[in-house]
Image: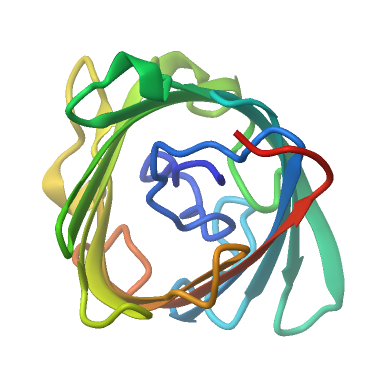
Length: 253
């Protein structure tokens, strides 16, 4: 599975490369999940600021390849690209993310997993070029209801915000199965600032996505939504889609 979304500090660009609330499940051993994360800011920043390219009208495409190793571990690799309104397709960066989950044999009442993501982004896309994300996941299915919570901690390893320490970027998903094939829900993403002292509210990032998930079969993954920014530090309108397919090379769990 893909990693959680990490929002940078108010001086950085909003991360529109991977917008997803992760579940606790990992990819089965002998299987590979290939995903495309497609995002565009319909209403965002309109000019270059602090050396960062504008977000409005920019199309972001991220290729994710996640390999399952055991019944409780996987590693994801992500290649970030961007198409700016006045230029061609550009490589934006890359990320690697190992993840482990609590085995089924533990019989926990909720799903639990933990990921560690190391990423690089070019300076024109982020004021922090090297970052570290620690992403716990807690999720639960109650009949047609599904809830997932990602209390992500992010650290700038190199860049303007390296002195800010760990920053708290929680995300939450609440979904409801309308039919056996269609689920509707809300996804919430936030960037609150350093854990030592949150930023002022107008400098924080808060975004809500009404989303649709389609069950196209056990090998497929589809999610789409429209995000509304709630603060001046957040892009006002963002469109996103995730399309994934699992390739089975060997035995599953």
